[in-house]
Image 1 (cartoon, helix red, strand yellow):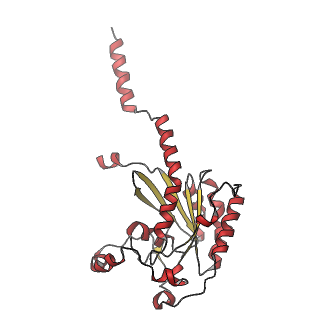
Image 2 (tube, helix red, strand yellow):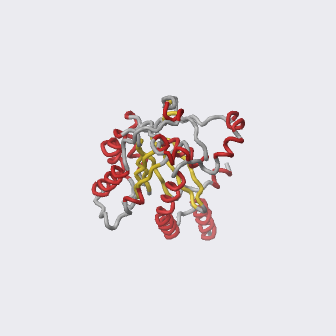
Length: 263
């Protein structure tokens, strides 16, 4: 299996956490596939590998359903960045981040970076509603091709149908304002025992996005990737300082030494 031998291990891990139906999978599809499509609820977790320049970044999409909650800490183990996602039209999803998901990050790296992200901004913000990525026109031109393509199914649990607001363009009332997200980020730092003055400022680590239109999605992921670069370089330096032993080469050298010592 020569293909397997050429695969590189991820340099760092990024994990998405949040309640069900906040749009975690849709955000990831928007960034990795440059399109928005109806998804199904994730079962357990799904793994994606992103080639970012010369580096490989693994992105873990986790399930928000209560029955899969215990798996979250396993997926967070060794994470260099965690994206905590809520729905800007549903205040309870922000509360769930603190009540259910924050403790799951205890297994992340000590220097883990955190971002608090409010998705579905197109439902409350006219700017996000009309914003389209540069790939939007290309998506329309290849609509027939997309219909022929096999959809990526992550689970057997379908999401609810699109809301009337998303279909009609009517703006909904925003239940979570930016100040709420900033306050959660500051409480997160206190929970982690981190000094606010020496940590990344909340103003740069709180985002509002729209997986449907692409609003702020690239900005979110690219900002995080830039911030985890020191972790990537440090990890590579550690691997170079402690190289692994090739057992086959070691066995071959041992057999040669044994033959040369005979007689």
